Image (cartoon, rainbow, N blue to C red; front, side, top):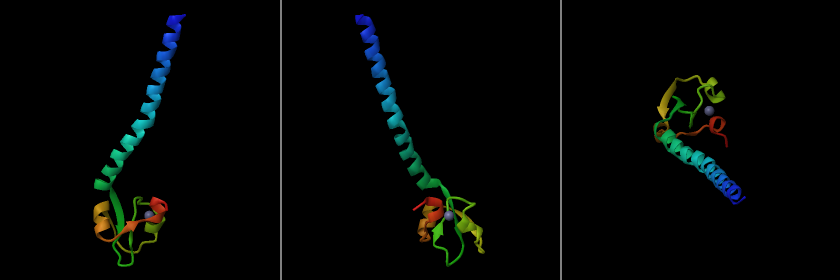
Amino acid sequence: MRVNTKIFKSANLIRLFVFALLFLAPSLSLNAGESQALAQNKVYVVMSNTAHVYHSNRDCKGLQNATHKIKQVTVEEAKKMGRRPCKICYGH
Ligand SMILES: [Zn+2]
């Protein structure tokens, strides 16, 4: 009986460990992915004086109506151009 209790306890510990891993691992990789996305992700800007945003999605509604040339740049470049994230692509 004592052995059974031990097994039960270690199984609980492993479950706790797996649970902690499941909880921690995605948030860690998300942070890494986020900074990577900021560094090298490509975004789309409309080469117009009246455009002030950049888009993550090439099929964005904001790009479909564009009459000017659409250029693919990095997020950093878009920010240097004074662009803000598009509300349609990036939510609110
Ligand atoms: Zn957009």
